[in-house]
Amino acid sequence: MFVRPLLALAVPAVAVQAFSVSDVTSFARDVTSSIGGVVKRHDGHHGGHHEDHNEGPVTPARGLGECPSVWKDVSDDLTAIFLGDNGECTALARGAIRAAFHDCFPGAGCDGSLILGNEFTNFQNRGIPPIAEALKPIAEDREVGYADLIQFAAAHAVATCPMGPRIPAKVGRTDSDVAAPGTELPTPFQNASELIPMFEAKGFSAGELAALIGAHTASVQTTVDPENVASQDTTPGKFDNLYYKQTIEGNAPFTFQSDRSLAHDDQRTAGPMQGFANSQGGWNAAFTAAMVKMSLRGVENPGELVDCSEYLPRGTAPRNVRAAPINDRVRI
Ligand SMILES: *[C@@H]1O[C@H](CO)[C@@H](O)[C@H](O)[C@H]1NC(C)=O
Image 1: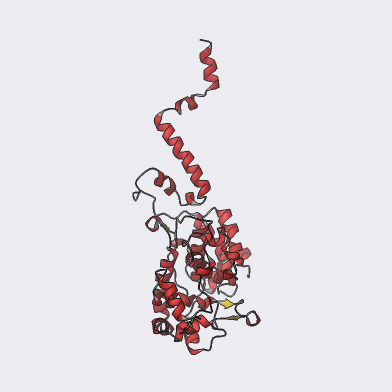
Image 2: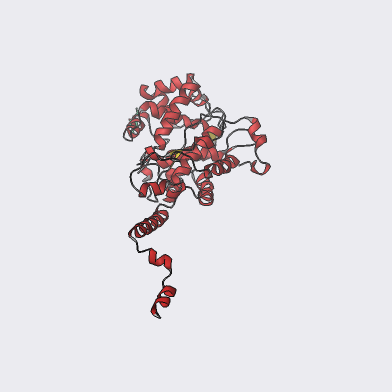
């Protein structure tokens, strides 16, 4: 009679009940979730999917496929730094397009290691630090994964550049801080006979390489020839196919050796590049497909990613600039 009340005081009813089998299982799952939340810090940010994974077979349950609304906030953050006063895309937007490739192409694929593994400080990634530093606070404040943010930012940037296509943007990748070797990145000094096998080794055809290199439509080189900072076509703020025409004709402000070689030395890339020079729509379609493929490189659960394309900009027109909150119209 005396012992019972003491026990009741010392061991709250909730704790006693926790010894039932189902509750222990549930507790273990919660602990696993917490640990998972630390190790793969961003895994929980695509809604309830994290628990779905732990609880057994993944079925297309209700809610699977819905983009967490935090990506709307991420999109607004990115618009503030990607859309310039002139309605064109900014240097940070151009950096974001490059960053997506730099995260996905080397090493294990699109895993955020460009930032989390500090790859961006390697000389092969020179030019990347400003966008890497700009994305860090967004990932931290919005609590989204780096691998996802890098890919979403690239899709956002392409859509923000006038004439850029809307590339489907999915989220749910797993982050890694294991740095990929910088030596796996192509350089602007390589020629077609080196670059084509390099891309084929990663599963990308010469035609896909020809489509991807068109990202240089929004490129301004600063490091290959620092004395001659210059764009790779005359309209670096637009996602147009002028890059192909000017690279082929040799009248771009600055053309990388690699791009000149791809445009002239090997018909497997030169042919498609001529085709893209003749067709903005043809290039948009090929670029979109190749970027989606790139954005899934090394991703182990592509079928479980959720589509967040709805939060990408609708396309850039001068009215978008006027519609932006005044404080967001920061010229970068
Ligand atoms: C491409 O570059 C490699 C290495 O510098 C060189 O051996 C090869 O001859 C070049 N090929 C062409 C077609 O220029």
